[in-house]
Image 1 (cartoon, helix red, strand yellow):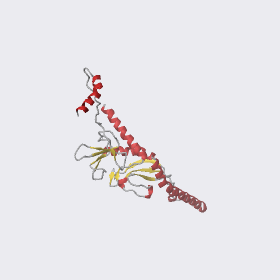
Image 2: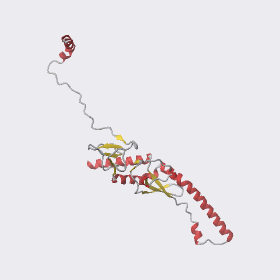
Image 3: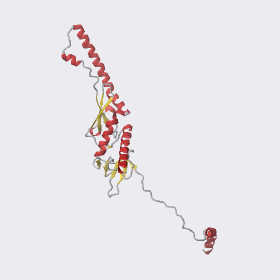
Length: 246
């Protein structure tokens, strides 16, 4: 044991001799524990961050923002369980208004919705237009062959109604949606857009008040286009809030 200690001292000698005199305290690298933690996202929607609270039992703030601590004003809502359920989730009314306002501005620009609307309404309107043209032609031939003037009712019937479309639903993507092939539940309908006689979206978004951010099928799910628009809007609101606090 003594020999081992002597050998170690000889090896350390040069190091000790170099540090003779009043040596300054050794500088020890400081490792600070990270103040941020890796946030998880919802399995069903990877765009939505989960912010756990420090309380017991914990509650979870769900938001499109990774900023910690999360902004209650811009959060989608809070939940006492993950994944959220209708009974565990509390909706944030401010976010709902922000969501609907974003849809009213951008839903008619969504490529997916444009294609859906045309697929659902375009063919039907095409048939309607052909039938209307045929009826006009038949009425004209009848009038010319008999020499009888059109009655008021016949004149009204000849008014072109093919330019009048309908409404196309903006449906939550948390469940599979196949355009007009499936009638969605009212709790899954975010709102409706007006469609013209050629199956083209013309805006006029109307919110569906029975829509729910969380159902037994899961949480809010939007098309890729609208998801980005809502995220951009939330980030803009966060930036405005930070500027106002300065």
